Structure formats: C-alpha cells, structure tokens
Length: 246
Image (cartoon, rainbow, N blue to C red):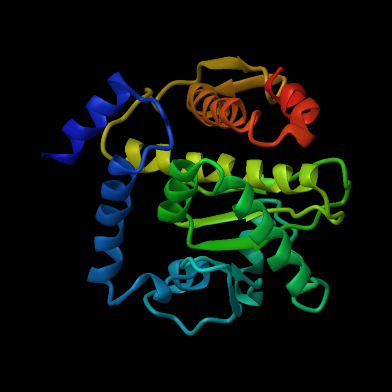
C-alpha cells in the first residue's frame, strides 16, 4: 500500500502514537536516501556523516548502547558552527564520563522497554544520541532537528535513581516522536507553512508557529500515554509519574 495512504490511515486512528508498522516503513523509506548515497547499513550512519557529506570520515567517536544499533556520538569540532547556530552545548569526550553516560542511557532504555512498542518505535527512529551539557540539574534538555532524521540530543541526569532514569527516558521518547512526525510531514503537509499566524503553546508559555504547537501536541500526547501505561509498572515512581501527567 502506498505510504501516503498508510499515513492517512494512521492520522485517522493514531493510537498508540508509537506504533511500529508505519514507523518502520517511514524509517526504511528514509534510509533508501542514504543507500543511494553509498551507506551500506545503519552502522554507517552518524550525525557527522549526515551533515558533512557522503560517508565523510567520522570525527566524533561512537559508543554502542545495549544490544541495539544505537550510538552515543561524541561531538565533532567540524560541527561546532552547527552546535552554535542551534544553541547546543555538548559535553566533550574529555568532560563526559562516557561509561556513566552509557549506563544512564541503558537504564533509560530499560525504563522504555517496559512498554515494548514504544521501545521498538524509538529503536527504529534513533541511531545517534548526543549528550548535552546540563547547567541546571533540575532542568532536562533535549533537541532534534527536522532535517536530521535519526539523531537526537539529550542531557543525562547526574544522580542515579528511578526518577532520573524516567527523566532521561522521557527526553528520548520526546525527541523520537518529533522525528516520527517530521517523517510523516515529508509525505503529507499537515499545516500551512506560508503563514505568520501564531498560537499559544502551554509548554513554552509563548506564542509559537502552528507547526510547533502541532509537534507539541503530538509529542506530549505520546508522553502522557506512555506514563499512563507505565504508572502501575513502577509503583516506586507513582508520585512523580502522576505529577508529570498532571
């Protein structure tokens, strides 16, 4: 069935947002673009190579996460202008405790794995994770770029607790859902882009273009559904989860 038709069916009945059938088709279709550029497998992918050109030598090293084709990608000095343009402060390999970051991400993925379809959906969408500097330990940071299909940027909490694992897991799910909606938008425009109209975003507490509000609705709907399913599975974090839901 034509992918655009599958997308329309999903939009009509979109739950759960982290389903894997359409997600897999979207990711595979996007990956064909990489194959035409000479990429042989997902292990070839990195943000470095995507932004610097076809199979450019990787400047930032990659560290594998768990048993999935997921990597923590160290920052590249050649991408510094990109980081600066988008206000991204990445931890360098000298600063970051790589083993601690990998452990934190593995624990976050263990949390996500409680809801297997959500975990599988994320695994289809995310190939490279960058670690952001977290100036305030109480404020989590995350980022993805609509033109970079398989990469996300997240901060990882310094402390080791169920709550901090949940916080990192939420950031990963958040950015993965942005990636999914962007892949959908590549096929079916969902908003008019040639307008200056803005709408109030309760998450930003400011006026935002309609596309930003739509992404917020999509992403936070996925997060609230995730927490509702997770609540009974992590009773030790029930108070935190209820607070996030509210």
